[in-house]
Picture 1 (cartoon, rainbow, N blue to C red):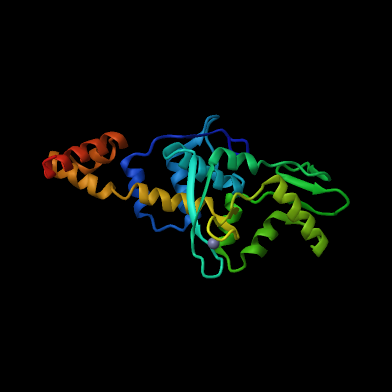
Picture 2 (cartoon, helix red, strand yellow):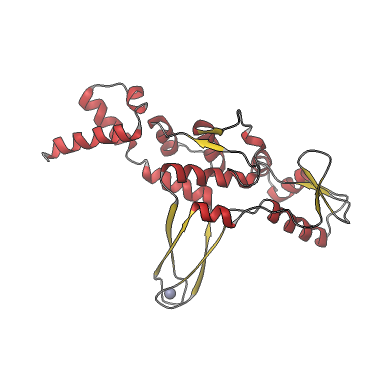
Length: 254
Ligand SMILES: [Zn+2]
């Protein structure tokens, strides 16, 4: 279930064509994950308008795809910033726990406005809505992303500093960012360490590495059996890999 929209996301297994897409796409991370989600994901309840999803839900989409294809446990590491230390610090957590920890809640003083998707703040002449994927893409395409985003999602005669702070707080409660900081302690020097975790960038890098054998596997099966590329790419991942490993074993005489 996506945290903010409540959409029940279903993810199918990747085909070889999906793996090729991940390996070869030159799209920026957000549009790349959006395109991947369109290919392999959907809502259990019917057609899904991806561009209207809350932007933070796209991070949850990336993590759900990762959970479905690779598993729940994430293990990553960072270099200790302690003077002269540079020790590798392991950080591990579960995707389910991470999403639970970032669960949205409605803060006091925030009410749903009559227009769908808009909220009001008690005592302020302002309405706002949670930025969607479409807002995010529009902001990224412009020269002033922050202004574009607030122009689309905040409706107020003027935005004072106090109002900006309240809006910030309301948004981070209604749609907590999953692009967040992780904390840890260096085992060598005891220094507290924070590192940024960007779900979309992380998922793409990991999937690219997981799918890095797709060109070789396709080549090996085509050469060994004379099958067409499309036939090979349509095979289930596990079967394609099994054939490729048999071919490797034969070549190496194992
Ligand atoms: Zn250290």
